[in-house]
Image 1 (cartoon, rainbow, N blue to C red):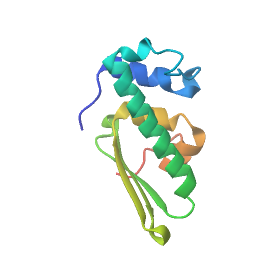
Image 2 (image 1 turned 135 degrees about the horizontal axis):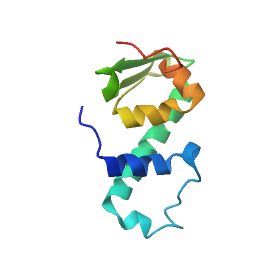
Image 3 (image 1 turned 45 degrees about the vertical axis):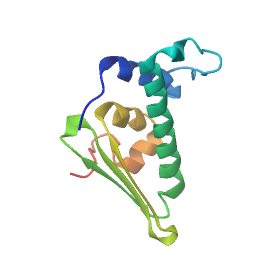
Length: 119
């Protein structure tokens, strides 16, 4: 799995609400002219969608986290057979770390203290 560069990771951290106020693209248009910022925003929106799916479907189906080497992210799989829903998302270590900052998501993914997800 290819890791993201430091500039992208920093932008992604800045876009995460738990680390400060959310940066609005309309109010901070000049910031988002930077290619790295635009890519980080896409990553951020993808993480928000995944978080929404995890909280919406976790109690109706199964959620699994398969770790690649533990320091390099993993694959999140959400499956809900009753509605024929299946989603597989490849995350790098920074994205997984940011998802794990939310206590509910950390628990769903098995990232609670002392756990490292499925191997």
